[in-house]
Amino acid sequence: MQSYTIQNAKENEENKFLGGYITGMHPYPDRSYISISMKDGTQTIYIMIFKKCGFGNRKYDNPTVKIVMDAFEKGIPITCIYTQGQMANVMHCVYTNFSVDYSKNEEKEETEDTSLNDNDENKYEQLELPI
Image (cartoon, rainbow, N blue to C red; front, side, top):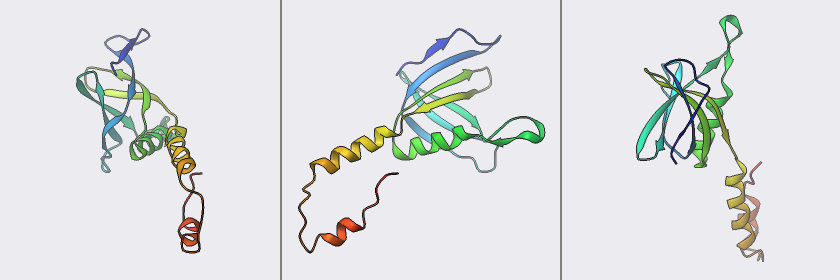
């Protein structure tokens, strides 16, 4: 997908709106941010997501990090708004619909044969269902 510029950015910055699949995840355990890569048309862009939010003594874990990591792990698309600055692209907000992944599972379960014989009972008892 091609990104769109949002007309509310500060001087020397551009806010961008982009949706699609995360093509790469870089967790950087020794840094204060993670980085993801996404396709913007024909080029790849890298977006930083800070691990902490807030100011001073009131910092807390950034919930965006968990959402992005889960979306990448499950292979579902995200929509994000990030600031395209001179030095780096920084994520401001993100949205994903985790039910996309679950609807695929539901379709698969509906098409499976539901008749059981004695040998198949244990196989079905061990299945984990999505929460």
